[in-house]
Image (cartoon, rainbow, N blue to C red; front, side, top):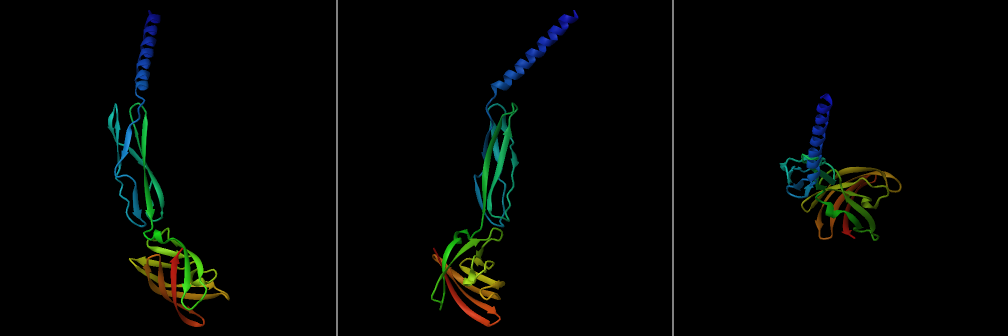
Length: 212
């Protein structure tokens, strides 16, 4: 009698496992995850608004996706936000959103031919957009001084402001020089009127920057 009971129990367990396994095998379709709003591009130091995503499963219906990934609005780059939904059978569906954080003056990056008024020879330098401060550009060789790689300017609309800043040990012979001035953007470049203050005094400089 005990053997019969054990046999019946074993059969019931096997049948139950077979039914469960069969159900899982029947559901092999992952939920469809759809992001709300598509990819985004935001300004550096701007605000990222999470719009979320929806998920629908052919058997379980609506599922709330989980979200992973972060956006650093204080540093330029492309950030990936991933949305994942899992149905009762363990099938996973995912979708991603690419969030681009960019400097508003990114279009000004590139190589420039620079001409200082009154100086015959021009020189080349590269301008980049700051990766951490919006509407700021960085010069690779401002004023054609050797080792002068740390000068920057801020841009609001068409106005360029060169805040007072001192470059240490630049040029030949090396000296500390303070630059300050303003300018304006034009099609294909910009111009700057600025002063250079060093041990010899103050020099008023006009310089034009034409994008290559």
